[in-house]
Image (cartoon, rainbow, N blue to C red):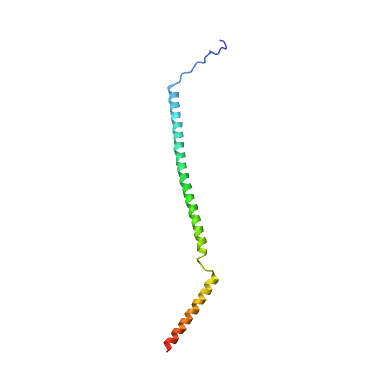
Length: 105
């Protein structure tokens, strides 16, 4: 026995059970990798849909904010409404008195 590089180590023969177990384990690993790939694709699609929904919600929120800003200009303050109501009540009273005068003639 010399220390030459040509020295080979004897290869042990595989049994049928070992070969079948290796095939089964490799099939199982390949199936798990395929399942992980499909799951990842589904998650990517779900994430893209959620990103689109978020974009739509942001756009809708901006529109609502603009609508609220515009609505501030359309409404009266409480003081303005009170003055307007008093003016309308005065007009109604004036018309009521005119009507009463016409009916009394």
